[in-house]
Image (cartoon, rainbow, N blue to C red):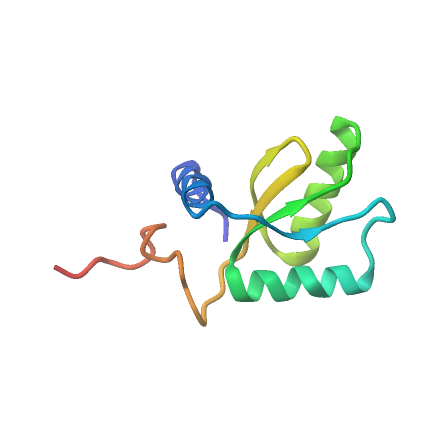
Length: 107
């Protein structure tokens, strides 16, 4: 599911409001299968997660971020310095469905 710019903006604000801490930290050795499993579990449980990535050049960071998002079917919400925020919807919990306008609010 592709997010609109308004939805991305809402998720970015929500990540700031919740004061998310990095759930996954990628060390200098890079990504391993265990780390990918940890990312999957975190996305299944939280939907919106913050990750700390190693200090790379701008192109390297962008490639790493896009690779993580592609492998985990997630959306890159924000990238500042060595910290990224990614989102993947989980239909079982739909924590952010109302925020994203995916369900109608009841009066």
